[in-house]
Image 1 (cartoon, rainbow, N blue to C red):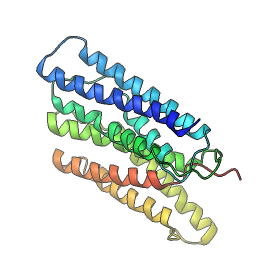
Image 2 (image 1 turned 180 degrees about the vertical axis):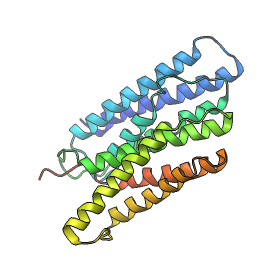
Image 3 (image 1 turned 90 degrees about the horizontal axis):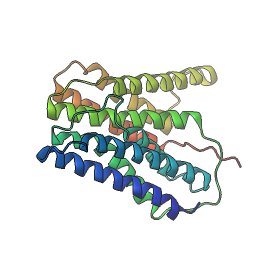
Length: 241
């Protein structure tokens, strides 16, 4: 499918997220019944549109070096609301939508002028996909912690825990492979350096989870950004040749 067609799905998702953020802000001033449920539905719709966009980008055989697929998948993980939902009594709940909107918007910008290199729609690389999932969970954790600081709400820990656990598994597996193949924990490649840096940043955020909210938020944001940057540059498609 042409990149312009993929941009339709991602663009609609961005529009839905903007609409959800606008409704959340409106609810701060006029608490019209039904708006919270509408925002939840809009976020689910945005997530579904992003999934379709990611699938079509992969099926279309577009440039595998462009981080479009990673950005869309991370936005997909960050877009839907939590299982129990959230009150929209404060305008800071727009921060729950902001990470997904930034990721999707960046992906849409990247689609606008992709550099095509022929048809490349090989299999998904497991490590690249796992790192991308970590980035999406990190973005979700960043939105949650920002909202918690702004509203003094309860701490929601599962996205941060899941991201740190998965990232530790990836980094530990890479270290074991290096020991097996090269006799050393760290070979020093660019991807391994990024993985180690992201793990250290997230470990700092994890160690500071009992600290004051503002410090926890800062550490989580730094860790989330490091994960997103790592995921955006990590190969997620294997060239089938």
